[in-house]
Every structure is written in structure tokens, then in C-alpha cells.
View 1 (cartoon, rainbow, N blue to C red):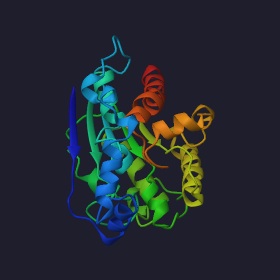
View 2: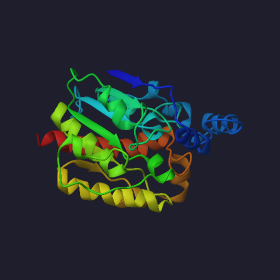
View 3: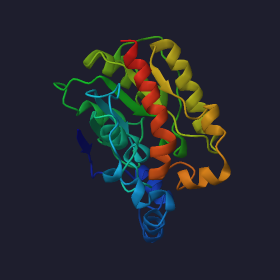
View 4: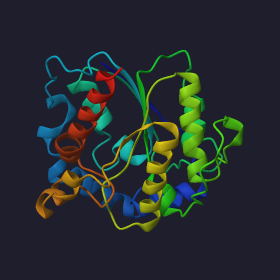
Length: 261
């Protein structure tokens, strides 16, 4: 099992706004960190070192690249997300390229696209799993339109859809492996709902995988008490949320993808 975490220190003003909203900077940081440390969902029993690997996992030996921001990183769960649990539970080789506060769209060193372009292309991945970033919705970045093209140079990376299409085309061209986007669970955001809808339309164009937690009936049927235990806030899960609620959905989806290869 290998976990590699990509970290970029340079943040734009827009990213600082997002980090401030989640308590990542200024006087809110102490309150934010204290809430995370004392959240029952981040209790010791859910810590990574207390997770027992599964026997004969269908994902064993797979190499996975997780690309994302705070949800992929695990900013409300002590730096642990489903990517880390899958690495341990399923004996996978996981590269976790996750930087909190970053966006799919726009140009710059810390966007999803820019960080993807810095991943060593000599590595071989069995799948690339990309987060549908809530930061783009929070910052109200232009959604854009689905292109009629499949060429990298034709996508407008300053828009959410353009950045998503660029990522899909680049992964297919570079590694020729499954591209899977995942959504967050449902929360009160019309811009994010529009992004989810756009993602599902992109699925038809590109034949990509989508782990759609937003529209998943099981995820939306969770009780209020369980939701409060699984989520530190409306966007970020706790360790228990990742381990008990999110990770099984990822494992089942990936197992199905690999079974059909």
C-alpha cells in the first residue's frame, strides 16, 4: 500500500475566500480545528491505523489517482478520506492529489487541471477518480457549455465544464484508463446541482464513470442523526462518514468497473 499526497502552497485570493468560509484561516481556524478534533465521527476507532484490510478485495493491487480538493483530502477528518481507506481496506496503491480550496476551473498553478498536468506520466493508473469540486459552486465560477470537440485545445479551462472536459480528454489520452467523477452528498446549493446535471450530460458524451452521491437514494435516505454523525458540515464528512457511508459506495462502483474490463 502506498499513499502519495500532492501539496501546493501557493493559494489565490479566491481560494483564500473558500478556506476562510471553512474555517481554514484567521480567527475561525482554532474553532474549526477544535470542532474537527472533538467530532465523535473522528473518534479513534475510525482512525486509519485501526482499519483492518479486507481479504480478497476485487480492488487489490489496483493503482488509483484521486484528484480533488478538501473533500478528497479529508479536511474535516484529520486528513483522511475514502482514498486513504480504500488504500488500506482494499490493498490499493493510491496517489492522492488533493489541495483544499482549489477549483476545477480557471487557470493557475493549483487548479485541478494544472496539478493533473504535473502528475508523472510514466506512472500507470487503473483509474483516475476526480472530485466534482464544491469550490467552483461556492465561487460561482461560470459553468460553460459542453463542446462538440474531443480535442484538448478546444476546451475553455476557465469554465467548469471546459475544465472537466480537459481532464477527461487528458486522462484518456495519457493513461487510457477509466475516468470517474464523484459528486458530494446533497446540500443546499443550486450552482452545485447545476454542476451535477452537467456532469451527467458529460457522461453521455464521454462514456465516463460517475459516482453520483448527490442523487443516490440510499445516501439521501440517511437519518438525521446518522447525517450529523457522518458529516462535520454540509460538505465535509468525518472519518466515520467516509469509512461507513462513502467508502462502500466507491468500493462497489470500482469493483463493478474493474469486473467489466
